[in-house]
Length: 179
Image (cartoon, rainbow, N blue to C red; front, side, top):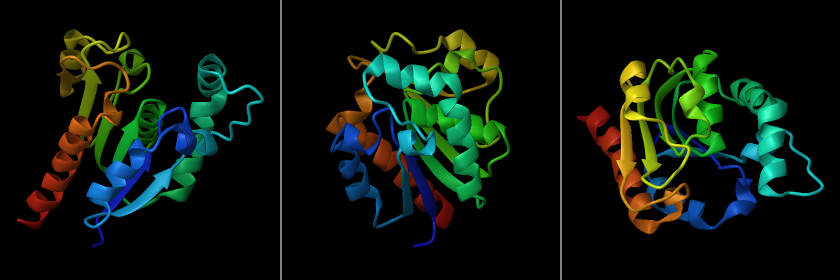
């Protein structure tokens, strides 16, 4: 084993769904996986866990706290798979100097506001119907690979077909590295 993969949850954290176990099922025999709950990384303690309250907490200091905590926990280069705000946390950690081998960012929140990208290989994936997806012009300006999946929305990463595709992409990195 030995190849490190960090998985950072979406805004709902570990409570957000059982879909994360599908990723673990595909990837755990090939990667040394560390899972991070984005709410725990950000030290969110919300009385009312509505979507609006959670997003407000992340964008009013939570993302910065999460980046600081992630960087304190992880100093060795790793592959990173992030979902929603977890992908944004990973992106910003990369910009802050966290060593990364690659970043697979699925529906990263407010990524279109970024003017820089981490210095590692990366994939950025959005659903066609995700209203917050960046434009291809943004991707060109950033020299970023942007992949848009037709007929999917923001939570495309919970669909089994997408889970398989992402897992296969990550496994291909191991095969490429071994070859």
